Image 1 (cartoon, one colour):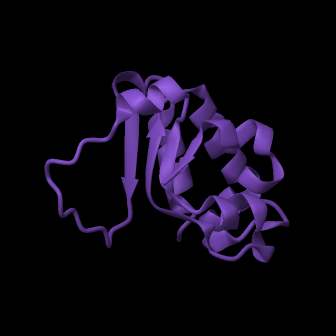
Image 2 (image 1 turned 45 degrees about the horizontal axis):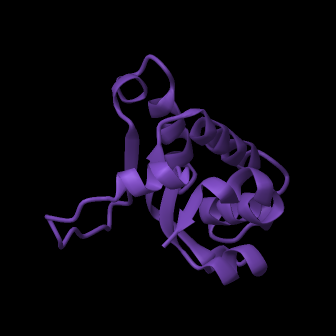
Image 3 (image 1 turned 90 degrees about the vertical axis):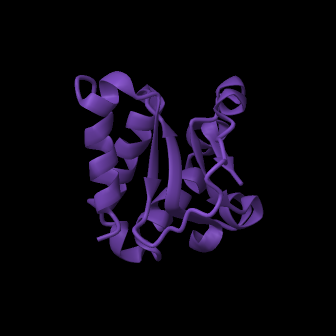
Amino acid sequence: GQWNKVALLAALMEPGTAAGAGADWLLWVDDDILFSDMSFEFPLGEYETAGQWLGLWGDEVMTYDQGDTEGVNTGTMLLRVNEWSRRLLSALASVASSPLRPTLTNHDQGGLVHLLHSEPGTWRPHTRLE
């Protein structure tokens, strides 16, 4: 299901794995993505300078003010390979196995919005909603 991406990304980010040892960023895309601009380049330097280590589509009002699970789309996510991202994925995995899970709508998106909405000081400063 939708929560599998959390486990897979967490495994790929572990130190000593091919991705964890050599990649600076991981891009998750769901299987229904369509690439239309082959010359697009992520502004990774801008993200680095701002200390933003998770980039995804999102609406700040829906996500931060309303806690609406439609406020983000985890179908395309760019994650910096670092300790903060590992902690985020661990926190998401904890939500997935908690009593909170059945109350969430939109699966992992609901889990992410829950974290962004309930622990703003931990997760928001390094998250870029676009």
